[in-house]
Length: 173
Image (cartoon, rainbow, N blue to C red):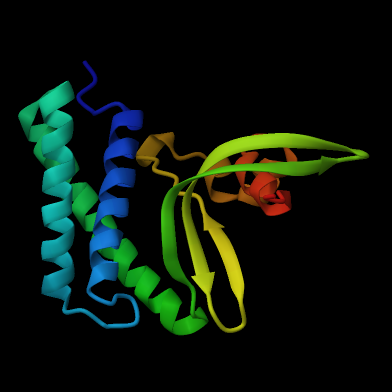
């Protein structure tokens, strides 16, 4: 049998852990404040514990060992993301602003406008020079990750991954 969590479950657990961890880290002044690695790890571990416990209460855990391994993997991924985003902040000034933001907007389609509704995983902002960017999280494990996941531009041209170009050309009223 297949002894992995459904990718959608792992993806949801990762998204929720990222959101909660970043919200809490921002309360400590991150990324402008360089937090101790142990503080980051503890914040992420606590957030992951709460997210996983809430999920387990409503939907169960499946195989206990797999559940624990997935939680450890997600904690590691989020800790790595925090370190990477801190470096990105130092290099570019972009920092996470909001998570899971519902948007309504329009994409130009010739002379018409196509209405788009969706949820943006994360919006980053940079004060100087002023800029905004959308971060779209993708969580793929091992064999699931195909070449199209690594080459978004080519995939968008082929119509396989439409989110990034849609977000890029969307105007939000």
